[in-house]
Image (cartoon, rainbow, N blue to C red; front, side):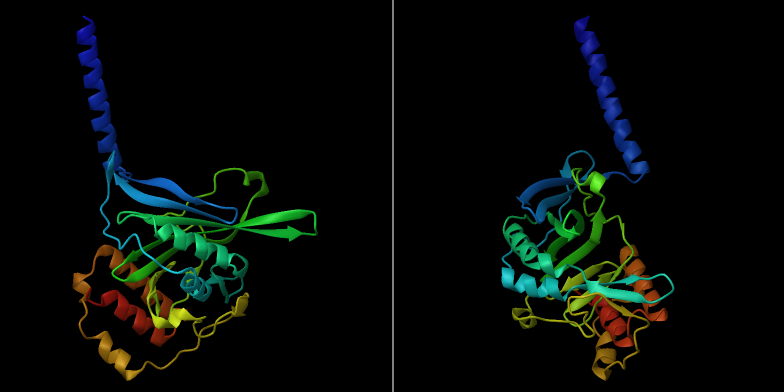
Length: 290
């Protein structure tokens, strides 16, 4: 009798698991993330993040990990990343994505973590900055991102930039950076060597010699916040127009994700958020054959 009960219980468990998997697939929640902490410092915390499909299977990503990136090179790369945030009444504020006060700590943590991350994992990075107020109070700010290396490019997917952490929640678990969420309204600034890969994502030629020393995109905010109205249109070099149509995929060959990125890029150009030159360069990066 007890054996019969055990068999029935096992059947119910199997049925429950099957129903759960089916529900996850129907609702689009079949993908989850597994996180393993590798860096836990005062100003920087880094997790190894893998995508889990179904119950236990880790999604194969094929990233070029582990990798060796020097701290000095990462400092130069992080200092070059900037974002623009829309302001009430029009215009944008351009500012560094990584506050200058924590760039050194961020570069050290990311460099160390890249030496440990596997080919199917991203780096989930949370950076904490503390700012004193009147000598008595303080505010903590969170900057978070995902990072990985693929096809000789460093990808930075920003999530939060200098986000004020509510004091009531300072002791709570910090929100994790995710690929399926955009909790803040900002857009990345792209250009030569730092290419547009999405509204809040960049594809960086991290091995380029330009990152041996300090590097800045045109119109850099210089480490500060700087307001602007509309980007001026810049002429597109003839060689860029020619290269844009050579060796690239046609629109019909793009994936749904690439089509969404291209649509965002077109909207940026129409709204004057990027120059014509930057548009052509970013479009070429999107369409190029790999």
